[in-house]
Amino acid sequence: MKKYNINKEIADSVELKCLLISNGIKVEPAVYEIFGKEYRLNVSPLTCNSLVLSDGTNVQLTDMGFQSEVPTPFQLRVLDGKAALFHDTDVVDVVTFHKKTDFYKQQTSSGLPFVGNAVLQGCDFVSFQCLWHCEYAASGKPCEFCYAGAYFEYLAQNNQPQPPAVKAPDLVEIIRYAVQNDDASSIQITGGSTFSGKTEHEHISTYLKAIAASELQLSGEILLYITPPKDLSYIDEYFALGANRIACSIEVWDEARAKIITPGKIDFTTRERHLNALTYITEKQGKGKAFSNFIIGIESIETLKAGATWLAERGIIPSASVWMPMGRPVMGSTCVPSLDYFRRVKEMLAELYSKYELIPPGGCGLNVCVEKDIYAYSQQFNPHCALYKIKSL
Image 1 (cartoon, rainbow, N blue to C red):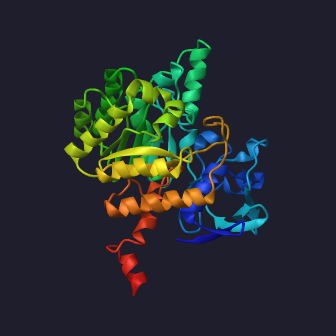
Image 2 (image 1 turned 60 degrees about the vertical axis):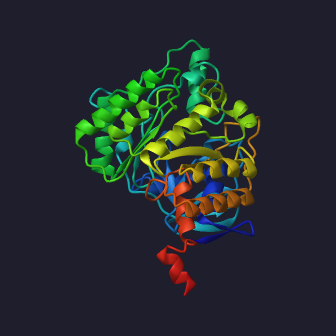
């Protein structure tokens, strides 16, 4: 794993990835002009741009050049014909991008545009951000860090209709294109939280049945992010229909903070229901089949560690998305976490993955999630790993 010099401090690629996600990057216009012709790079933020560090680490590329009032020390510029990542005036790394795609120019046969409904993440995922709207957000209790939730709340406050759920044939068309043209092998299905478990069950089961009927050959996994239902038999059905892993994401372990940051999840779903669903999955499906996302950067390392440890001890994967504070304050703050904070998170999760033999999903790593990157880091210090044995000679 490569080391980088960041303002006279040494950071590895996981730590640098966290810093880049949380700070954003100002992109020189020439980068789009030169590299956008050959690579997956677009001025539209809806296309979920990412860059690849020289050691292969995939990183979300949020261009802060469109938010001039938000400072960031990182820039992406053209240097000697290559894309170079800078920290202030210092060159940090020479980066590359994923191969060019026409994915975001497409629409389904019904006229649904791909852009705004699905994204390509990393080298292997086609992800659906919000296949149905969040009823918690529309009721005035969105998660503070969630861009989609803020949009649903805005629509409700202005008496505008919520967007309809994406139809299963459209979903399958999008997946088929991504598999056949962009090397996608895994699917991430996400929707908003619903008050009725039956409503969400209808959405998810319809999607899974449509994917199965499509006979698409997926070499990866189908990940579901769900609201934990009262009727846990729904979960059994999802696995029977083809889901490989299911997340009931807690996001914030500190319950006092969670009540402010994720009010709908605390007030409507409750922490108890999340934990019951996660342990149920592990008991029925086995270790590593359940996971729960944490938003890294919005609570103390101590409470985050307590939550991650509680899950890992029970065979549940604690996954990690890095908070993007630009434009979405949490508890009134947009303060970016320090390098030391991210380092401690990395070390903590790496130890848990190694100790409890937990393997997060995915190949090269997702854009804003760092669990697979941390897992790769953990293998360097795992006595059962060949790389560890080589370094120990």
